[in-house]
Image 1 (cartoon, rainbow, N blue to C red):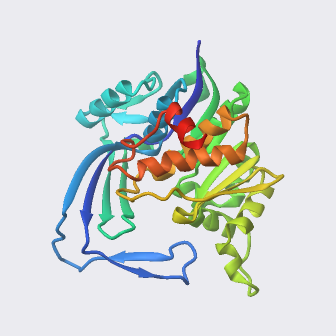
Image 2 (cartoon, rainbow, N blue to C red):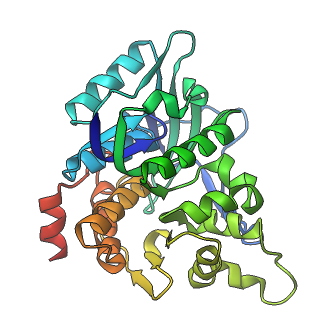
Length: 336
């Protein structure tokens, strides 16, 4: 029987990143869950100043990050039996991620992402994601009888079977007495509180960016006429989400930093001041850094926030979701 520190669950894809300055960004503050939009001339050919091909996907990003931080890590994901799938396997193996629980699909392609990155000072990005065979991931407890882990790091689940997979994952975790670190994906957030509340009660750490937190909170709380701006305040969102069951709630808000609430105290960590090159994978770097810090620092949420911020602050200075990831020694040196 194999014992792991952490097993990640989620996507493993190839990222195609194109940099361009031709997109027009405009604010839409009236839309609480999409406060900025980007537009391109209809029918135009858009020129890219730079282009890169890297490994991505929430499951892969977090697995590589946690393995580099010194944890015995495995990944549960689904890849096509194609050239892209083979490339991803080779890269994960090189990064010392266990591959025993990766599913291969003979009929469907490995997923990929097309990323538009802005040439402005924020270097933010818009991601078009094709899940491919990732949507056909199967999680049945009997498939993982030999699996033992202290933590599951759960990222976005896609496809029509996502809810059945979610139920099976949480049931299996309870059976194995494993903790769950959860960063829900689009389908989970769209399902809302009513569908997710039982899972939230079993979650050890829930991590969301501010827009995601607003979307989830709005699924269970009416805006009303009085002070709708309260939904833009991370502290307000933290309090509501913590009441829904997670032991620790973490909310990130880009350059404004991150907050964590463990039911006793709210902690805040400022963002690392660095030159932004590429924001792809910054959330996965933060999440894996936070969990690593939480484990290494005796569940000290304040110190875990620092680990997450330092790790994400390094990734954002390099192109790709994994190139700037830090080792445990590097993070300890930067946070000491």
